[in-house]
Length: 513
Image 1 (cartoon, rainbow, N blue to C red):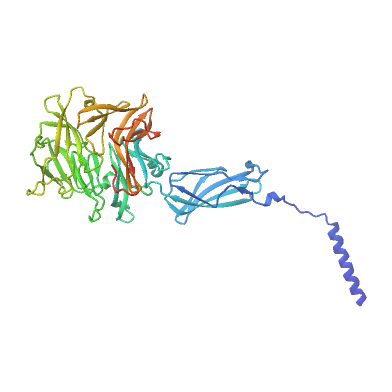
Image 2 (cartoon, rainbow, N blue to C red):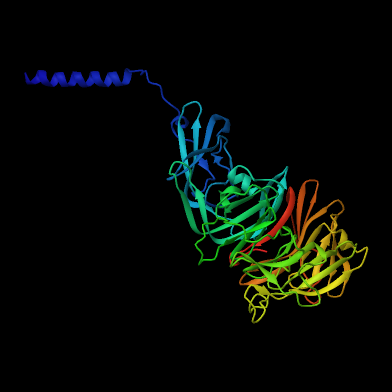
């Protein structure tokens, strides 16, 4: 019996071994490349980019791999953003228009077309806001206005509003202006039945011939359209927008509205009632004289008046002096502050019923009381006209189409709408051509501009030109001794569209000129 048990074990073992040797098998074996995901190189674990930069990623497959054997998919997501597909090609080129933050994930999936085996590669994406500092250029194309920006590293961001909001602002461009620490009432729609107020917000206004819109400076997202900027929406298009650090003046139908944005005010970011009085001001000739006052020209009475934004009223000006400023025998042609505010301004007026033109210089803010007359009511100001000179017949400045001013000298820069810029000096009356640009370019903007940097100021002479639908931006230095413009530019930038306005937005300044 014991012998039979051993015999059974031996026979079973032999049968098993024979089966293992003799079994030809019926199994389908896969190649290693069919079960192992594709090997991918040249994708970084993280990327940091400015908003409006383009992210380029060029994955490299392992040697011997055929790119045509794979399908590709790129997408992005974050904890508070749905998955967004970026592309289906092996290489990624992605213009970043999403909000600045640090928790985005870029995902690359590569799939073997034959076997379906796929592999994922993940990269963190940190997006930084680039709009805090740089040259803002207001330009338009086909009656649609947008902003291009020259960053401190001299790269140019193009069509910012279109790329972020889907479109620019309707109408021919006029200007772009900073507003710091403003409160903004943002409509939230009928889902809540309420609006929300964003306190101490940094924004920009963009003005065209048709409208004004307000944008957040961090993301360049649209906050308010024209009607939302008023307690009661006006029926007419805006005519002018003039801003200081604390006050914003907008003109509709020759009537000004004032917005007080001081930190002590309880503003909600909306213009309220118009300034009291029957004055009809010249909308394009406003002279900023201080943080709280604007010199305007009343077309009803041909008089200069002081718009006091602190009281939302017009202040009368005294008539004493060689050149009375009330019921004047002149019509306004041009008036603007010198770019270094508190420095006064300059003006050109035409004497009624004649062909005589005169240049006026306007006193700067005296620092003590907004030109108030001692012993008189606070709303009565001294005559601001300091001097007057006859402009000779035939002077080129009389044909000017584009005007600009110096930061502190009594000079009027001008162009007749060609490729030349001239200067008329009101102190020692004469005019000189100061700079010419290549043939075919048309000057669209000239002015002194200030760049606040490292706690100081850098002053430049800025010129915008257009040719064949392309803009150029020229920056010139001033000669230290004479303050004349150095003809050779220190920098030239270019882009698409017709340029209308430029200013430098700084991290340290609280207003823009």
